[in-house]
Image (cartoon, rainbow, N blue to C red):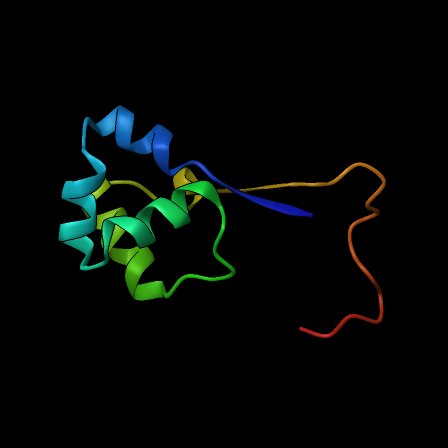
Length: 80
């Protein structure tokens, strides 16, 4: 399973620069860059909320899930 981050697309649609979004959210440009590239393991809801607030979008506009080839949807014994 893969979670894709479509933040670059939303930034372009809203004509917002990464620097502006980082300042609004209160994170560094480097951390925003890591987020855009998908190199983070998690994100605070408060961060996601500020991103959605500034870009006037829903979390689903930024995050999407794509099933990996050969993945049957998860392990039945897996706990959350």
